[in-house]
Length: 255
Length: 255
DNA sequence: CGACTCATTGAGCGAAGTCAACGTCCGTGG
DNA sequence: CCACGGACGTTGACTTCGCTCAATGAGTCG
Image 1: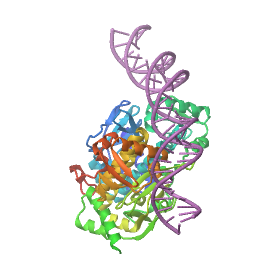
Image 2 (image 1 turned 180 degrees about the vertical axis):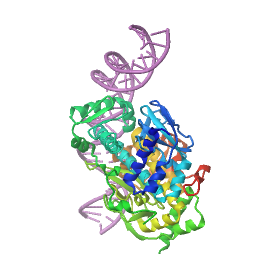
Image 3 (image 1 turned 90 degrees about the vertical axis):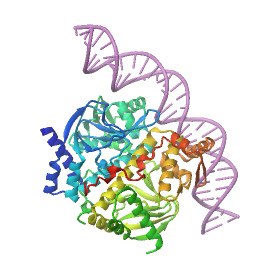
Image 4 (image 1 turned 120 degrees about the vertical axis):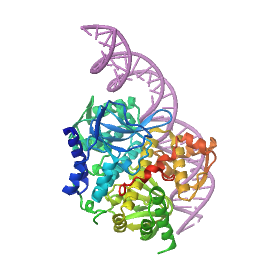
């Protein structure tokens, strides 16, 4: 097993640990997970729509997205996954899915067999609970995305997405909220925002002219974090990246 | 305990059972859940935003929605819950939330204490898994809503929502997909669809003129199910209401 | 009866989409 | 080394879908 996969698993375990109290034994069990690694180029499927799953996909490097297609050929990205994210953890309990997982930029994936994840979850109920909790956070993000595409105009919408990715990437140790790489093209951002690439381009310019953020290539430089968060109506609470709060210690397995 | 609460719990247990294999003992444990029942009028909060949770809310009668507010006062419904749905099951693992739960029509709720649910989940890992699975289905629905507001025009959007509610209500034994009551006003539908009430009204008329569906008051009569599903680009797979498939028997707790 | 919510309809506007053209960058292969 | 194609970003002109504002009716509940 390469050091790359070790650090990928470590990033995943770390992400879980930030949200759920896990002891050494449980962390050790998580760190012993492993799987086959492979790399795909931008815009190619990691998992195709309708495909049956026997593995979950851990992002090691790059950026992956969950894509859903509409009849007329347009598509919508419903989730973005960065290094350390286990893309389809919920496929453990609901393996049949209608969406595809695709790389937005060259992306390295580690396929972790369901059986391994199930063994860990079965042996350590607190790990099962941590998995469930992470799925809940994914759902919170999804919920915010509904608000974003449903009720915010183009500038707020883009601002919100930038803020979300800034916090998540910062939390993952992949930059700071003020400066990071967002490995997506404008037309991929359009698919995430329910917009057209043309309008994303104009909106990017508008945010630059408002001196909020400069997006150059895939590099993002936030000039005015507060202004951007205000425009995007962004409150990071839903990402649950902060330290544990008291209520987080409530546990299904040890109430 | 009133017979109303018994049948509400039964509906919830039944919903879980349709998606997850549970034995008699597990079902019995679920059926022994109980809690305080109360009724709220339309448009009043069942749980307010930011409130800390010690209970999950089971819908006994009526229709409830999860509401999120945007700065400018507009709001977005991110989920709809019907009788038999446990609204905030995921609050078990992520109690702090930014959204409010509100009744769309006069609604009766049973507040089930977290501790009770936790005890059942702790005692029966398969029940915990069933809870997790139901949360995953909620997330699938959310994902579809992102697609709906992000990439479909008004007519398809409304058609998709009608189809979704038709299947869910039919599955809950509250009507058929051809004829059911949708306990929401046009302006509430607008909040769910990311539209204005004025445009919902026009879209309702358009669907009637296309002879797809007649919405009179809160009564919905589907005239052309296939046409409606085609327009809404609707595929019920994501609702996971069908009979168990082979892969659903994979279990975290008994692989 | 009056106040309220909800549905309905018209007129006008504006945010975002569509269509189209063009430039840059980059990888690949002759 | 350069020619070529493809992906991506940028910009302009025009269109349109859905929003805003506004008025009116129908139904309901206290």
